[in-house]
Length: 249
Ligand code: PEP
Image (tube, rainbow, N blue to C red):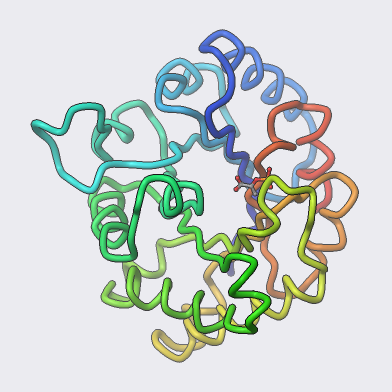
């Protein structure tokens, strides 16, 4: 069956030492606790190799990878390089990458293929912007993102993907989707997957919610049948804020 996952996205925060300390502190509080979900932290590239040494039960991920294998691409970091640090996950298609760095569904498809080729689990982000939600076309937008980036994958490869539904209007805004809005979109996403790959694969796909999730709303969001955890930005930057979200399962 599908896994429940709480993944932190540190974004562009923390010096190297601050990141090491945060990872160490989180691992320390998790040790000896009974946790009912997988816990992942997605750090900036510079933290990966050092943080990998500090964690045992926490999964490690990057926040992006290059759409090229290797070579003369100054400033880029490849999926193979990420995997060589010990990371097992990579966020692909975060709305901030789509909006600020021009990442299209076609580019993201390449990134997914390279992540999978290097045994990284893509945490693939999808979600509509506010004007699309207001126009009532959120399903069309999210359906297109999924189809154009993921639906050429083999069933076996699709089965390795984690999805994160992140309504862009809820990211970092303090405005969370209601529990009903989250469930409605997650059910639509699962139905879309079932239409292409069948019920079994759809039922086994973890679909995380992201967008101003916090200690106060995580329990209600995660109680929905199609919400399998969260991708957490701001509230993953402190153990005090992240732990209650992990413990919401
Ligand atoms: C995110 O960056 O994926 C995110 C959901 O951020 P926040 O929790 O801060 O809204």
